[in-house]
Image (cartoon, rainbow, N blue to C red; front, top):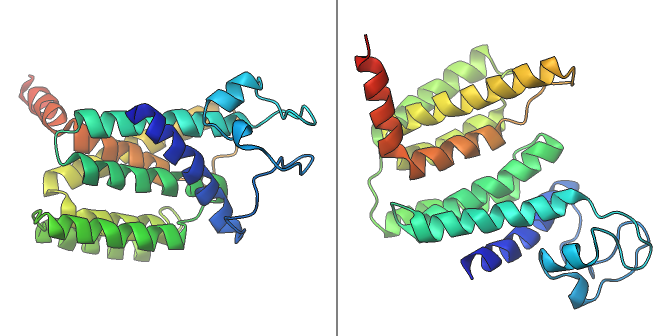
Length: 238
């Protein structure tokens, strides 16, 4: 049931994350992008409609982008893992990672931090964490502020302002260790992606970095103790 709910949020979230950056309306009747035929509710059921229609529009037989299916599945898995297996508060963790998922989609397609999604989700995150009386990590916040200032001055072309703003919004709710691991993991994912892209001779001059930050955040929130233990073990090895 949790997976199905996540797929529904994924279907709507994908629409939100891809329309807002283009200033498109969120509420026109759903239609096929190729033939503009209005879709019935039977054609809008997450996962099921795509599979029954074999990934094609019922009216013009144009292929439906696979991205829709991937978005629904990944969001369904995200909700399942967060709500059923999260070591911390499952609701706030699910919302936090869902907002990161939304921003990752916008960054992947448009190379931007979608302002409206960022502001609304950050406000809700801060209010939710404050309501639950979660610890506000001033040390992490000040460290991130210094980190953002240095990067924006010396390496602004390497790490966008949007990435820095997102880190600032997340930093108070992460311990210094968690934040350091977030930077390490996301940078490692970005470097790996860059190397693979170069080997495949793909254009990788400007990377969408928010997806890597989101992956790092997911690992830090769910496997913090495991990662910590692995680093201690690696440090103690001769």
